[in-house]
Image (cartoon, rainbow, N blue to C red; front, side, top):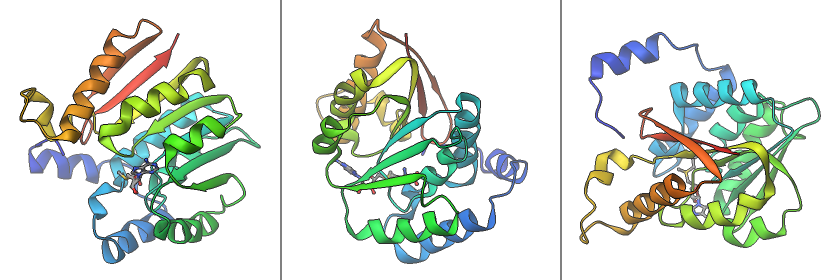
Length: 213
Ligand SMILES: C[S@@+](CC[C@H](N)C(=O)[O-])C[C@H]1O[C@@H](n2cnc3c(N)ncnc32)[C@H](O)[C@@H]1O
């Protein structure tokens, strides 16, 4: 996470719309039942994702990295009527957990779960996406980007999470760990790709908004 003045963070949380009861329960249960609850998007980023999705009104969303399903529910709120969100998770222990909350949220018929490595699953998807949310293994971001790119419509969107990686992107030395190098490589790839335009926002751990021209 990016360092932020705790009072500002509290102010932002206090002045952002409350989570609905299902998201609040999912947030709580993720903290009680999982080892890395900080991976969950949480109240402010979740609301941000929901707002972006509502602005785009996508028919098809792809999420790479379901975890316990928080961001999937937030993004699915903006879907067009009869739209679908496809979400991929490599850790099969999380599939049932997330499915329970998709059901509670009333979105079970609109959220399609895939269990496995996104790098194997993306090539098999014969779908045109309006919005792709990349939030899985940091060292693999460039692979997801390359694999999914042709499946995104022109004028479509990619949102990538953690692109400032707790400020570690400032360390571009050879000692940087694999995750940091992965994020650095991804940010360069996007920045030099003239098929897209992008902006990085300092929300939570850095969020990239990328538009396919
Ligand atoms: C940061 S968490 C996702 C958080 C979730 N999007 C949210 O905000 O609630 C990243 C997830 O990606 C999954 N993951 C890692 N590598 C993956 C891969 N190659 N394919 C699919 N999922 C992967 C991890 O198991 C983990 O649950």
